[in-house]
Image (cartoon, rainbow, N blue to C red; front, side):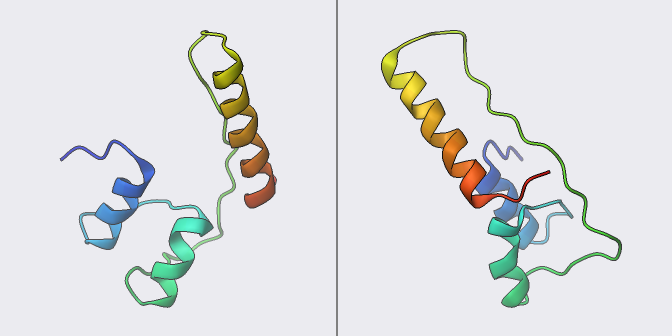
Length: 78
């Protein structure tokens, strides 16, 4: 099975195809709904990095800035 995106990975975990580490934005709802359970142990914070091809354009630069700004707003700092 291929899980090319984080949404697909979260869906695979919710479907019971295995265990996985999901960020709170993808895990909180399914945990509250009883679709997934939290394994024992302390949470693990990991740094996330945005990467893109070394192809410069005003549009791609703007997309990168928006993604990084939104991640800073929505995610907990590592």
